[in-house]
Image (tube, rainbow, N blue to C red):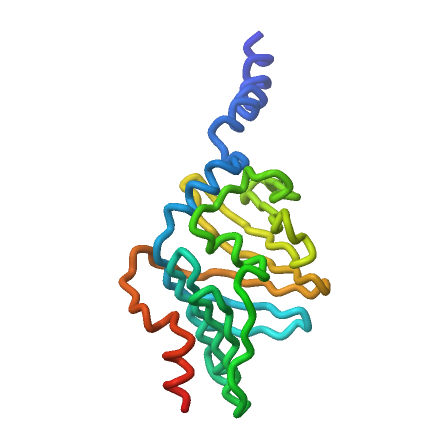
Length: 199
């Protein structure tokens, strides 16, 4: 009997382990986490659809504002503020390319009130044993593309996202070390201010 007990002990312990291990985060947990974010600053690595890689610093100020400052030699700038996204290309003498933020999947995490429980918003919700991923889309405009968000936790933490455009192109952003609650000037997210600075 003692041998059997010794043999079964590791199996019984293994069966008990899942309760201690990480579990799939619920949509409510993720929505609450995103709604609780106010400001985030950190490093990021971006992998483009063509395989090129860029790095830089990201600033997020919810709701509705984000700024991607790319490291040299890229030196580009992408920012969202005032309901618009602007792409500044230092190699071009043209004004920044602009389009409405609500036409991009990134709007889903920058919205004032994130509710991943909305009908037809989440089209994927998986757990790989370490991280929870959620694939979300604009329920009214699925042709705008999707955003796949990857979280670890608890405590919940956003690690990366993958934006798939309506044309099928993918852009991956992996977050490095981040700080929350950082003070950020409104001018960081002002497209008119940035345009003026570059004249």
